[in-house]
Image 1 (tube, rainbow, N blue to C red):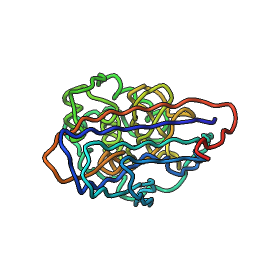
Image 2 (image 1 turned 45 degrees about the vertical axis):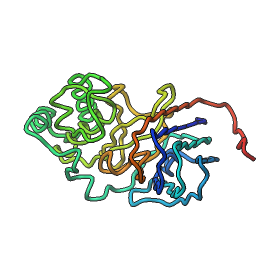
Image 3 (image 1 turned 135 degrees about the horizontal axis):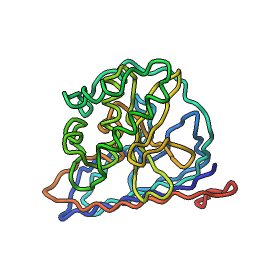
Length: 264
């Protein structure tokens, strides 16, 4: 499967700001299931951008704008090949323990117990977990924030994809199953998306509880980590007393053949 993607973010400040440092995760990370064929990345106003890989394997683009500006924009676009391949890399120990946004609660613990033991049929258990999250929670934007924990979202019984993923990760870890939070793009979504990945039967199984399905060939992964805080797509600081207005556009579509980088 060949997927083209385009991701654009425009940040408008209410007053001029300076000393703007940013860290962006908007380049697909290398995984056994996806290969980045080409990509280009631009920021406005222009500044040098350095690329590195964080401790979780995600690609991070960092930069610094010292001069005053009231507009900041960045665009990432590229072509990715998606294949059916299992990620069998053993999980780090921290994927088995609670993180700040996936800490357990009595309510989550009760649900984890009701799911039974993963036992001899861990894939079926993972489906029961996804069923439980999808049936308990309703998708409702604007109710939660990036700081909402799994326990809070579960109590509210609603949230967005980030909350569905956090609840799934929290339940898996309560059952002794290593789990990680993942984010990226998917065909037809129009925005960034988040899901959960569980390590069962010697491989990582990716589930999308928001859409109640397995993650497949129409998903592009940007980052994974213990929870949202490890894989925020956009993060930054600046000097100045200004509010922000953020506009995000995401487009993912299938192509039938390799396409050259339009910037070449």
